[in-house]
Image (cartoon, rainbow, N blue to C red):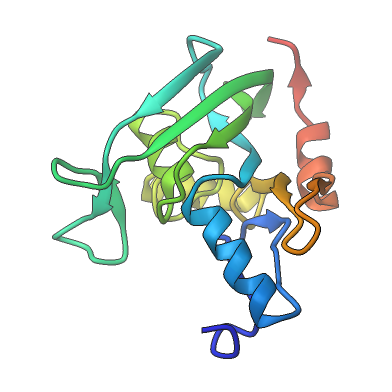
Length: 191
């Protein structure tokens, strides 16, 4: 597995920026995969979601699985795998679109499980899809979003794990990419 995956321990969705762990040795790879499987690794993501999320803190606990009618997409499905994401709204901003204005929520997310597209599916489930998300925001919304930001506003900002050799707890952070920071900076804040 180590050589087939070039040491890449976990994945990020296409267009998601941020931290990705790559093991240097097969032993470190095996140990890091164990930590992910046993949920020792703690991850934090930042996202910009459509609408004002209420309540501003909470837990999304709904099963996620592959959709039968479109095998490339995932959704909340009966019989799906357990999926838990905690979230906290950090701020909000207003996007002006001509005469129209839309509130967007800047959210910090803490997935407790690691399902494919989990954060994206969970926010869509709350009716607050991630800005510029081609799969889950809806065709028209995503098309309009992409005129302003050509990628999904999702960023892996922090990861905490035990070093695979010393077992000392480590926390790595990655600032928001310039592209996302610049877009966020254009919005009217604190609504």
